[in-house]
Amino acid sequence: MLGYYPGCTVRAQKEDGFEQESLAILAALGIKAQELEEWECCGAVYPMAQDEYVGLLASVRALNQTEKEEKDGLLTLCSACYHVLKRVNVRMKNDEEAQKRVGNYLEMDYKGQTEVYHLMEVLRDMVGMNSLKEAVTEPLKNEKIASYYGCLFLRPQKEINLVDGENPQLMEDIVRALGAEPVTYPYSTDCCGSYHTCQEEGVSRQMSLKLVESARRAGATQMITACPLCKYNLEKCQESMEKEEKLPIHYMTVPIVKAMGGMKTLERKGEAHAYSAENSSQSSA
Amino acid sequence: MRIPQKTAASHQREELADIIRKDVRDCYQCMKCSSGCPFAEEMDYMPHQMMWLTNLGLYEKILNSKSLWICASCLACSSRCPRDIEPAKVMEGFRAMILRERGRTNVSPVIPKGVPRQAVIANMRKFRR
Image (cartoon, rainbow over all chains, first blue to last red; front, side, top):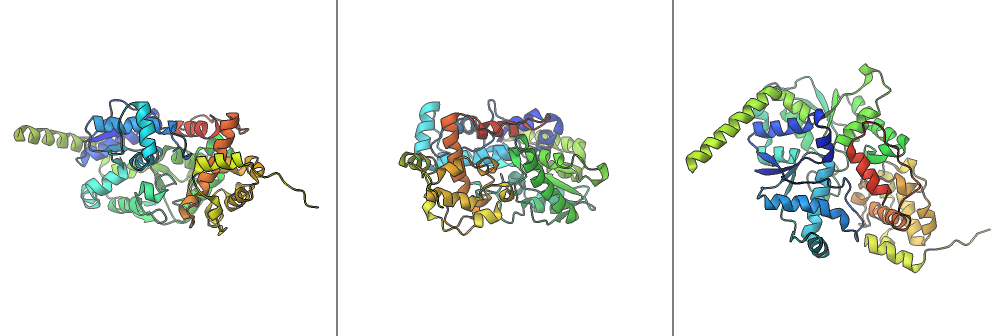
């Protein structure tokens, strides 16, 4: 059983369906995840200043809570949460001073034992692309999907270590498993402008527009991302366009749900899994 | 005529070194950081110039630059730096120096309706103290 960390944005934007869809996909594929009993916002940015420890506290609490609840790892959906939790975990594993200072303050002994997983990592490492392919009932034959990673999943590679930082292929593999065609375009690893959307309006708009235009020129019919902020920026930059001109931006779960037969089918499958798991645990006991 | 400029005091250099724990003197100006930076065209000093100004001790120019607040820490520069200097971290160091002294920057946030919380929080963490 994985611990699940929703994060502030995904939870606040529940009506987007990212959380509900992700958990339904995992349940249908036989992966169980349960929300942590207690969690708080991770802080959204990793504190890069080496002499600052306050920024680590919230994430360490969540990581330690995962261990306390005896979960096999911590699952998160938002790219910022993933980035922050994973990097804090690496820091806690390798930095003795951080262990000491954070440990003293929080009165806990945490040394980076928890594993942090993202949805796509679970699909790759725990489910496997072949099983995902088998679960697809309605292949997305006519879709050309551009995968957008953004900066948070990729860098720094030695700490995040999820995919190849310069030529990531994980989302493309997922798209292929769904029967759709992945689109190759040059900006899939560039930054979307991030929190500059609250700052210099022009800066993030230009950045996002460049990404969208590039994906459109490469022939994409939709773009997928796993970051609520990237999604917002990529949609916002197309605000003034005509409806037909807009490139749809989706969470990466949307095409998966569609290819696996819709939410109703997923929920049914999830219940079947839960039922069989319950029965097998009873018979073994 | 060349006007002599004020260079950074040793306590300022120490403060920066404490925050970033990197030696910027290793930089050999290959410009990989600036060529890959998605924000370079918006900046007044590009990342490699920021590294050079750091080495020259011209902290005043850096602390008053626009670039510091345009960098979004996407880490493209840091991940490509052959000398492992991490320009994004150096920029963060200067931001921290300003924030620790003044508590805030001159950058004023605008919070559009419907913006994800993630952006509001990141904004708060990066530009306020």
